[in-house]
Length: 367
Ligand SMILES: *Cc1c(COP(=O)(O)O)cnc(C)c1O
Image (cartoon, rainbow, N blue to C red; front, top):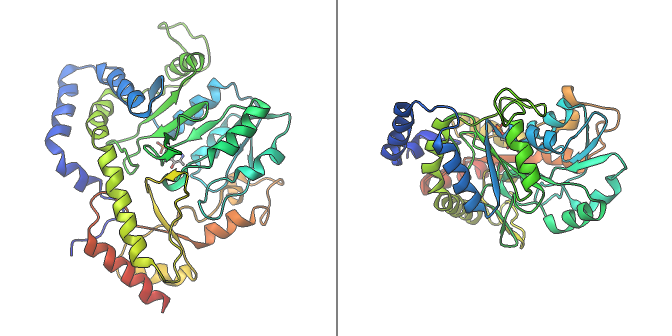
C-alpha cells in the first residue's frame, strides 16, 4: 500500500504535469506577470462554469472576503451574521474592518449555520450575512435568502471549500449577492500558491470589486476608493485554467471516495457525513463525528495515518476573537461539534486499499 496523504497536491500535479508546465512556461516567457491575458481568460471561464455574470480574480480567499466586505461598504460598528464553526478568515476580515461578527448556531448534521436562527439575530446594525459552505456541503440557502431579502441584507457566500457544490441543482456562490472562492493549494480547485476569486451578478458591485483589488483605482494613479493589492498572478491563473478543466471529474472522484468511506463505516459507532436532499456535496473534507475522538486520534497517529480536526476551537473561543457577547457555552452545538469532528484523508489520488486501512484502524480504536 502506498503512503497515505491527507491531501496529495504533488500526486495530482504529476498526472497533468505537461499541461501545467507548459502553461507556466508560456507565462514566464511572456513577461506579463501581473494582469496578463490568462487572468481575464480564467475569470471568463470560471464565470461560465458557475453561470454568473462577473468573476474578479484576486490574491486569496481571504482577500476575496475582505474585498467583498469593502465593496458592501461595511463600516466600524456594523454587524455581520456568520458562523463560529469556520476557518478564521471568514471572521478575521469582518473584525479587520472593525465590524462585529454575530454568530448563530449550526445545524448539527451539516455543520453549516442554521438559517432558523437567522431572523432573531438581525438588528438595525446588520449589514451582511456570510454563510459558509463548510467541507463542501451547501448551506440551506432558501430559508436564509428569504430572511435576507425580507430585511434587504446582502449575502456573501464563503464558498472557499465548495467550488462546484450545488444547492437544488444550482451552483453555490451564485445564490447570494457575492461568492468568495479560494484557490489555496489544498482546496478542490487548488493553485500552486495563493489565489482567490469574487463572483457576482451585480454589475455595480463588480466594478467596485475590480477597483478595490487594484488599490482602489481603475485609472492608473487615480484612487477612487480605498483598496488593497489583491490581484491574482498571471502564473496562477494560467495553471488554474488547466486545472479548472478537471474540476468536475475531480469532484466526482471525491464523491466516489466519500461513498466508499460511507459504505465501510455503515453500522459502526461513527457518524458519517450527511448529504441533505437539497445538496450536492463536493467533499472538500470528509468529516465524521466520533465518540472518544482522543482515543482515535492517538491510534491513528501511532499508525502514521494522517487525520485532522477542522476546527478544534470555534472562533468565539479563540483568544483573538473572544467577546462578552459570546462566552464559552453560548454556542453549545458549535462547541460540541468542535469536540467531535474528525476529518479523514480526502483527495483525488486516494486509493481503495488506503481507505479500507484507515477505516479498519478507526474501528480498532473504537473497540
Ligand atoms: C480556505 C478558506 C478561506 C481563506 O482562503 P485563503 O485562500 O486561504 O485565503 C476562507 N474561508 C474558508 C471557509 C476557507 O476554507
